[in-house]
Each structure stands twice: as structure tokens, then as C-alpha cells.
Image 1 (cartoon, rainbow, N blue to C red):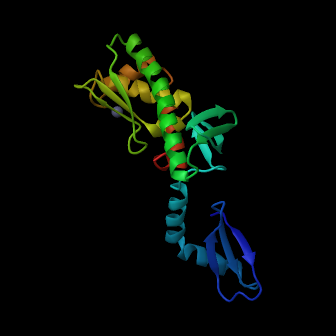
Image 2 (cartoon, helix red, strand yellow):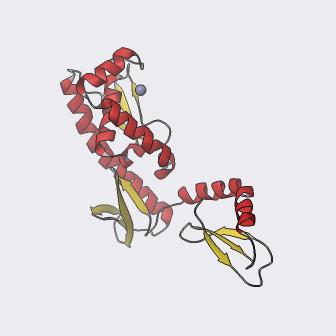
Image 3 (cartoon, rainbow, N blue to C red):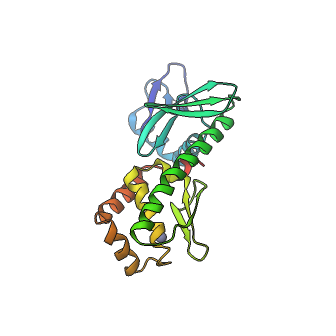
Length: 223
Ligand SMILES: [Zn+2]
């Protein structure tokens, strides 16, 4: 567990808090041994996890980072007469009529949804062309739960907003996955064989996605 340790003369007890950057700060009297500090952190693990969850879910503001197609961008907000967003690598610039972080977050979500829609529309149509399938309706859904879902009888594919955080090759795999559900509404051997027939490196992409899923809390990124 990462934290900053501060030893303070005059302090009687061990304490901890999160600073403005979201870093855990543990403070204690000068002579406290490391074993006692470790125990203190262990005993408060639940509280630490809970606070970390809150910090990850917080609204967006200048200094936050945006994960967009596998790359980190710095969020910069600028007051403006009109709401807009512009990607100026390495910055994500949000022009906002209202500096409240909740409003900035909505601008980010709307723009990411539009960009993900454009990406997914192109990829879904591409795969439908290759598999000789009529193009389905497409939506970008909330950034929670599954990466995508396919309503076969309605011929509707929904891609989750959290997919916009993935590397393009992995986001493309999500698109193909849902397109293949237009043929097989299950995860049968035939389903995977169909996916693999047009994406020969499927297994390495699947491995990359499960590795990433273990290290990034995608559900909380844009929800
Ligand atoms: Zn599936």
C-alpha cells in the first residue's frame, strides 16, 4: 500500500487522511515503530478502500486524467460561452459555461460517447461487411457493467462508454464480439470460432483485456 508517512512531534496518536491529490497520508508521533504503523494501516484497510472508491468516483476538474483509447490525457477546463471539448494531445480541453465539476463531467461524457459512437459505427459496419451481415442499430450505453451487449432479435448493439478507455485494438475486439452475437446469441464454440476466423490474434487480445481489467477500475472511470 502506497502512502506518505509524516512524523509529528506533539502528536499523540496515529492518524490518516487523504490529501487533495488523493494520496494517503499517515501521521504519527516521532518514535512509533514501523510494525505499529503497518498494523494501523491493516486495521483501517476497509476505510481506506472506501475512501479510494469515493476519490475515483469524484467529478472531473482540471488536473484529472482522462483515459482515451488507451492513452492518458490531462484534463484542462476553460470557462467559455459555449460547452465544447477538444483533444489537444496531451491535453483534453473542456470549454464550459459552468465550472462546476458535475457539469464538466457531463461535457466529457457526452463527447466521449460521441467519439466512441463514431469509432464503433465504423468498426461494427466493417465487421458486418466482412461477415456479410446487415448493419445493426448501434448505441453507446452507460459506463457500467459489461463492455457491450447485443440484442439479436432487435438487431441492436450497445457498446458501454467504458470501452472508450481501451486501446483501439481491444475496443475493436468488443465491437466484433457484439457483431458475432448477431449470428450466435451465446458463447458457444461456434461463436468463438466465428470471431477467431476474422480476428486471428483474438486470444492475445483477450489476455490483454483481462490483464487490464484487473488493474484499472473501468466501471468507475466515466460513470
Ligand atoms: Zn458475449
